[in-house]
Image 1 (cartoon, helix red, strand yellow):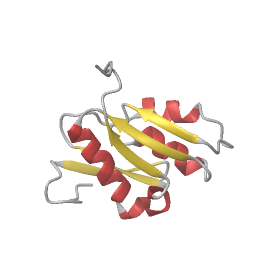
Image 2 (tube, helix red, strand yellow):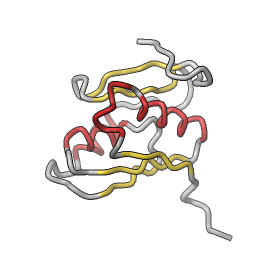
Image 3 (cartoon, one colour):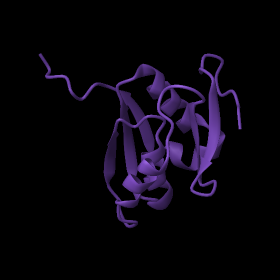
Image 4 (tube, helix red, strand yellow):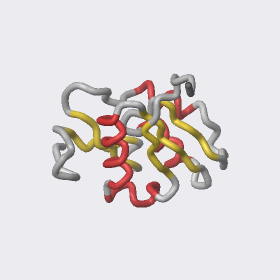
Length: 117
């Protein structure tokens, strides 16, 4: 389903995940589109998890949002080095279908491979 969430968001789709428990705004071409890899990663987090997690290489945020949709006390930071994909993650968090998750997540644009020099 194509949609526009912001005038400056590149061509994208808005896709339901976890039977509509959250929505992902992701590039329609190019970039990384979420799939089973993110869902399998999220499934490794116990359902009772109540801490804070960091999703490094978050893309549009699929893995982190999958955890948040199952773990109501969890919080997440979506860390992404690509400014374009961080923009998709921010659009994902601001999507109306994610209002129940957005206050427990934030996006950080950063390259965690830098040495700090």
